[in-house]
Image 1 (cartoon, rainbow, N blue to C red):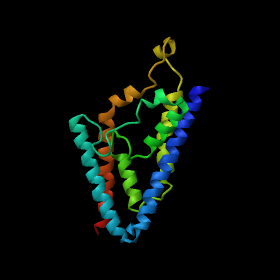
Image 2: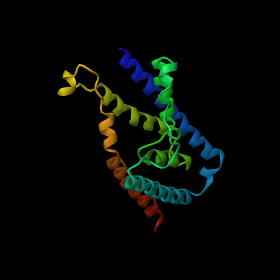
Image 3: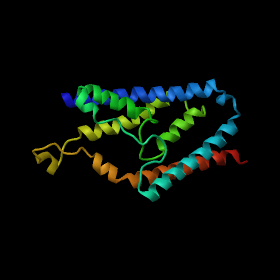
Image 4: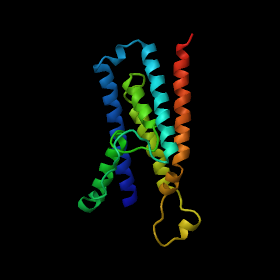
Length: 191
């Protein structure tokens, strides 16, 4: 039951933070007049930005590192010694859901936020981003333990380490997606 509660605390906080940051980006786009720019300018900026974000992924891939954009930090582990685990799970969810406050494996998260900041995605896109992250997380966390893990007397890694070993694949896929999307956006401008 505790496991469900922790997962719910993390996931709910992640989705709330994602909705908030995408709403701020969308509201900021309106407040700063970005949405008043002609659509073809915003599409050109989006296309160029996505290609630059792909370059960040390719750089990270060539250096075997994480996305070079953003703060190089995580939610402090020391919180586990100071606060109840439900508080820490909630803070971790809020922190990671904000996109900008912790390191990322690939630049695709930044791309989604950038598109919202250009007024090309609605503020509620954060809900899709949040659910797109937390749904696989919950499936990974609550999948039945098969094979050796089911027989292990100690808790086993739910798959995070294996996923982190696939970082280069995620970065390559992100770069390909960003280049293709950026190219399509730029291509719509060429008549």
